[in-house]
Length: 367
Image 1 (tube, one colour):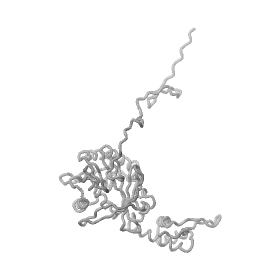
Image 2: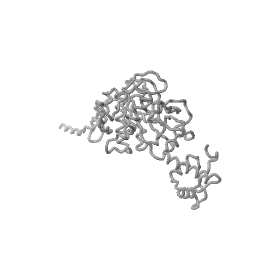
Image 3: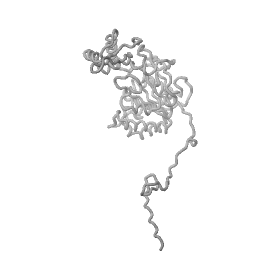
Image 4: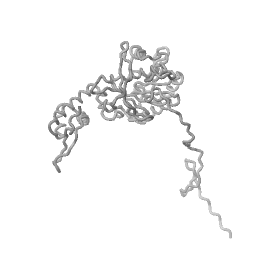
């Protein structure tokens, strides 16, 4: 008698297009997706609006405190782009239109005179907040209005877009501390930069209490510094406040570049940015200049307090904190002053009598 044929196991189709039997074993793979291999990619040389700080087709972040020349630097960038020149070498390039968003300054009394002093070709500077007839344009809200921005960049054939600051153009409900919302904005701006082969230059505000790595100075989400491929920080030498410094704490394309001195020369009552020689100062050295006057005063008080208390002998930390609070010095400010002075921590005593002390650095106080 013929043996009955065994019934076939039922098979299920997975979401990836693989055929999988009910017992879980992979039976077959059918997929139309094919990955691009490295040999199929055509290498393209990176182009720059200012080598090696302002890459075309990418996002650059500019940070700088009050009075360090941030707006003057941006005016110089706009001037050289609209005039078809490299910022430092004056090498000839193709002139381009720059789309500017800057709600914090008066266009007629401040922005236009600053651009004129910098030598910008004014007919190639477009203001995103103003219509052609001079009436206010609807405020851009990111990321909701990314398509509108893309159309403007295309219509004006812009080679660069400047947001000073970009946080003034967040759509309602977007929190600058929310990484997902910030990334949606930055990814959208990066896509526009790549699609239009344009530079996107953003400025953001600092948080209070800036110390250490300058990439941590930016207020809000860490995405503000993580997504841009280049970060430029402007400041002054804390020991010589009249000495302006441009630093490059992040450069994913070329590696961090040497810092440069720069001057703010006055031309018909308006400052003009002039790049200078390399300097050994790095972004971390500019911390003091990035603080507001009140912050600098509090830091100076904490530094003087610690020098006075620890100059002759080590002191228990709890006692230092108690006396500092009586002198209206916050613990966070005291801790930052400790780091700046190079004060070291040590444990004394044993068991339940063990306590922590701060000690003057063996090499003496920093000059």
